[in-house]
Length: 408
Ligand SMILES: Cc1cc2nc3c(=O)[nH]c(=O)nc-3n(C[C@H](O)[C@H](O)[C@H](O)COP(=O)(O)OP(=O)(O)OC[C@H]3O[C@@H](n4cnc5c(N)ncnc54)[C@H](O)[C@@H]3O)c2cc1C
Image 1 (cartoon, protein in one colour):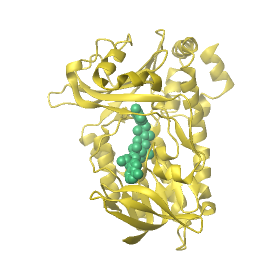
Image 2 (cartoon, protein in one colour):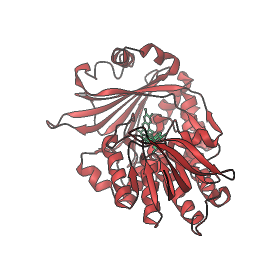
Image 3 (cartoon, rainbow, N blue to C red):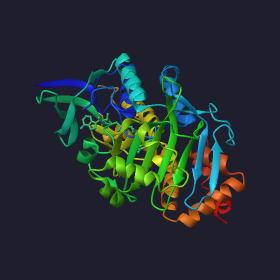
């Protein structure tokens, strides 16, 4: 069977649900397909900066997330490999943020709420529906082949296909120029009750090869803290986790002096999710008949916690460009979608540079320690965390004066 729609969105994570909601509100017919059924979980540190919360507020979901138990997030502490520490607060960053705190919220709740928003905005949700391949017409993308839960295959013809299918995007691979950059890392993420010493600040404990993020993500019925515990290690190291994920996870946590003894093994309340390797990006985000958004376009290392904000911001840009490109009833061409590519470049280039700076800085533990120590001692920690949380523009860090004060 073949059916038609204006827009087929592949993947109903934050990027896909947000772009589906925007385009449905703009009056376009949207099918939102996901291979999963919601609520579905996702390996993530579940850290939302104030700027990400602002984007969620524009979608009208923040009050609901808070009512569902999202926890306020005040900023981040970084503990460097040789013990230097900094504490950066969003509220104290040089330009007061939209609100003084971000949020920590479980992905089961966040993603389900955004899917519901897309549906309420008019998108048709197709769960347990996997996009296997793209359809082409005169060289451009014209739809997709889908497989349903019962194994049956159908075709959906669309004037625009939006690839929002995450890190291992089928759409990105089909439209080409998908690249993988070092470092190649894997993540192991658990929810654990009874983690000691956590307050409203997230913690990032960095070692010579990886890092651990701790973050208060919920309170249980007895008021106990449920922490998100995310371990990120090089891919080569993660191979030894095969068949013994829980042992590996707790053995590795024990290597971090600031984490050791704080995460009770008996407190695991959600299975350990494993994901990676990361660091994929697509140098082609638009083509005739298709565009990429969210992780399908570019993955941001979890250390700076910018993936969801980038996905939501990208969804706004994509929807604006797509609505204009589809206005006259024809197919969306790469030329008409070019404003999306340009908007991404203008908004995300600085963010990407900061992410790379931090990511590559971890290869040099002594330098990393020195930078963390200098940032704290010289009163620059709030600016640094303000930039990684998008409360401040990247140029607040990416300038010779700041960089010199950070390392000299
Ligand atoms: C360990 C880790 C920690 C992170 N921590 C943070 C953090 O604290 N804060 C933050 O902002 N970001 C964080 N991120 C990044 C964040 O998770 C992503 O950037 C974000 O989920 C991107 O949203 P998305 O909608 O693009 O993709 P996803 O959320 O991955 O959604 C993609 C969807 O596509 C569906 N799909 C995939 N293939 C197909 C197919 N062929 N057909 C149909 N459906 C398909 C999937 O089922 C999924 O629902 C973290 C990432 C990792 C790996």
